[in-house]
Length: 143
Image (cartoon, rainbow, N blue to C red; front, side, top):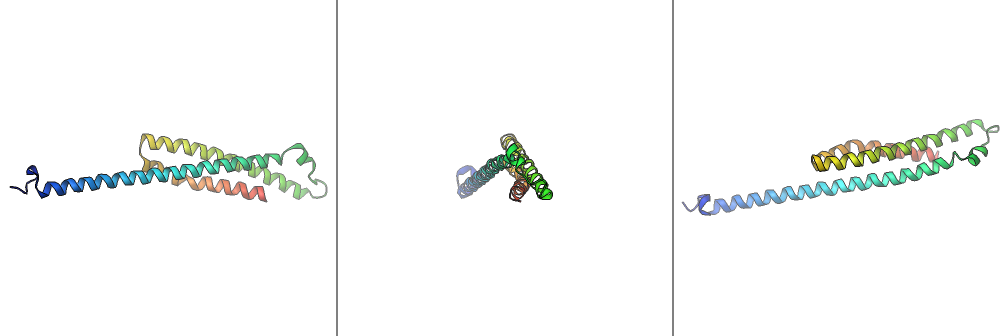
């Protein structure tokens, strides 16, 4: 009779310990997911800032002085390539900013309304798109 859970025997102590360990494990898992989410959101914010800078650099290529200085008669292909790469850099950088902003807003809503694990899954699914757009904008700017 002393081993029965109602009497506070060893069985109830083991059950209570198991529940405590499970609760603590779930708490740690949730904390880890929140840290991962914050890391990815900080990363998106960083891409956003850097893409904004790339947009500014690419935009200066379209200033009247820069376009006037291009050697259209002497090197038309080079001039056209410069203009196209600058446009591609600007377009891709703006796309990076738009996608990363949308993703940050969407993921934060998912984390608040559904679960952190759902938000992390959505973020991981689209993070590659942001990275590719940003890398393309850098390559086009350098090219």
